[in-house]
Each structure stands twice: as structure tokens, then as C-alpha cells.
Length: 228
Image (cartoon, rainbow, N blue to C red; front, side, top):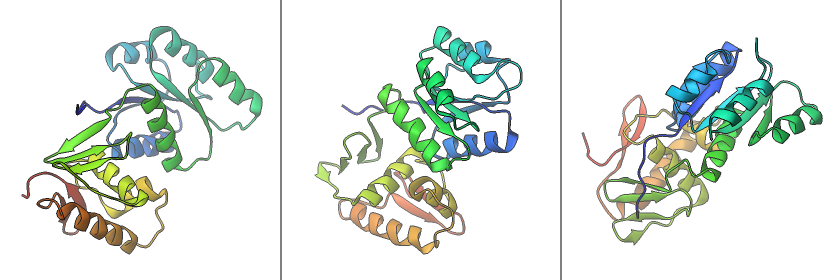
């Protein structure tokens, strides 16, 4: 059975604008629907209307702090919670986890690690689809199985991560910097690293069917079933 669903919804509550924008962009880049708030004043309303699958919650916020907001989320929603803090004391981490947080990340952090932790919590909660389809291509994120029609496509671990990213972004053009950040976790690798792995992935996919992974000159790449 193929499970195809709408993107998971993530509510980001972070009062530092630069961090909030960066976190929101990184989550959108891997296919999540994101709502960014600078504080928790509208939390009850957002939980009811946006219905997030997960909340990324800063601890040090104006007004009600993250620990108070965590209790609100736990009373009103089944959403997962990943907490962010500038304080690295063990007591703070334990306090958040004891009150029901699913994970805890200390600032400064690498965006790729945050995305990975968010994705891991969503998988544990069953809030992400097991597999997605693009044309005759099936990509199962949980099992790591990739099929074109009824044929298995054998990929390396890096090629699989790359394809899973393209599948999450299916239909969208993504640039090399976005790919480097999401798949490798850094932005300062040589661009030809992406080119080499995309070429290898494309060759394997095209052994069993028409082209799905297209180059958009000057912009990047897009995974789609029809060539336009």
C-alpha cells in the first residue's frame, strides 16, 4: 500500500527573528508546511486552527516561556515538541523532557541536525507518509526501498538520502546550496559534489524508465514525472 499525504505541519515559536526564519526555511526546504511565530501569545489559537504535527519551541520567550507553552501543547494537542535553548545545563534539558518534550537541541545548532531531529520525531509519531510516488517511481523512506515499476533500484546511502530529499521536494526546483544543506548538512562543499551524485542517481533511475530528475539551467534540479 502506498501512503501519500499532505506535508506535515510544523509550528515554529522563536523570538529571535534570524533563527526563526532560518529554521522555517530549512523545514520548508524538505517539504514541511511551516507557521512561524515570534512568541506564544497565539498558541492556543494556532493549535486549534493550524493543527501542527510538531512544534519547534524556544525556551526563552517573552511572556510565557517555553516550559509553560510546552504544558499548553501537551494539554491541547498530540503534537510532537522539539525544544530549543541557549542554555546547555543538564537540568534545563531534563526539565523539558520530563514535562513531555520529544527532543531538545542546544543553540547554536546546525540546521541539518534540527531537520533530522524533527523528521525523526515525526516518524516516531507516525506523522509522515511511509512512501511517496512520482510517476512509476516509489520511494519508501522507512524501509529505504526504491522501485521503478516492479524493479528495485539499488542506491548508495548518499544517493538514497539525495533521492528522499528530491522526493520530499517533488515538483519544486531546488538549488545546489539547498541540496548541500539538506543532504550533507553544510553549505561550503564544492558544487560539483552535488553534480556528481545527481548524475550517478540519474543514471540508476534511468536504467528502468524515462527521465524523472531534470536539470533546470541556472537554478538547480527538479524531480517530476513529466518533462516540461
